[in-house]
Picture 1 (cartoon, rainbow, N blue to C red):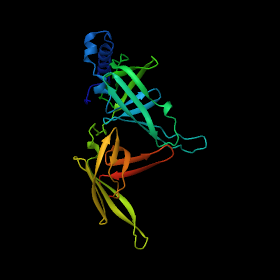
Picture 2 (cartoon, rainbow, N blue to C red):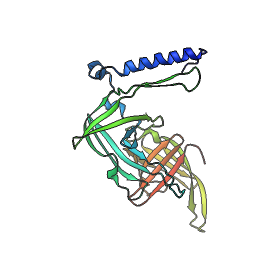
Picture 3 (cartoon, one colour):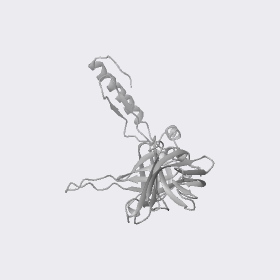
Picture 4 (cartoon, helix red, strand yellow):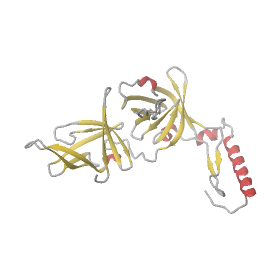
Length: 279
């Protein structure tokens, strides 16, 4: 955005010119081979972004975790319904996309209501609906180019349209078995029971993920051990968690200073949140 001291008449003229330019660009022939060659491939375009499919928005993480989040709603009685998270996986093999939601923080949810299945001939197409232009303050103009969308064909022969929603700038995940999104030291508070007198005591806990596939747990001056971990499709499997000989597996989400570890079943879920600074 550029600031300008032009008169209102000049600003309006500039906006008109800019809009005309976008319209001409967006309305280029969709059958032009050059335009098709310029389109980014679905495999490059899909990861690390949020996409709208039907009435829902899905996050396609780079580590192949698929997440949909429901909105909290206010009922007629003034009560607020709980927002839920729905977890699954996605894979794009050549031009074939396979996706499924498999678990949720909502008990006994119906997975069939969410995006799932195998789609062939997955490719991007140019959006010819035109860009948008806006001016949020005098002398400034924002031009938004139209984004390509993704199309695939389901096993029933029907087309599935996947529309760009936004970039996931917070997605630091990767496809490795030691996902870099987890690397570093994470802090929490843990309560342990004193076996001698049965009293509870709160300790600072540290969970230290290393790039070599090891993770160290330190709880006060009571516990200190190192074990192994592996990641796949947004799930981390730990040789032990918090205590020795306590293997565990979690779906993980890392948003800035927080890593959330979800233990999800059909009837319940737990979530442990770890922070990148002492609590």
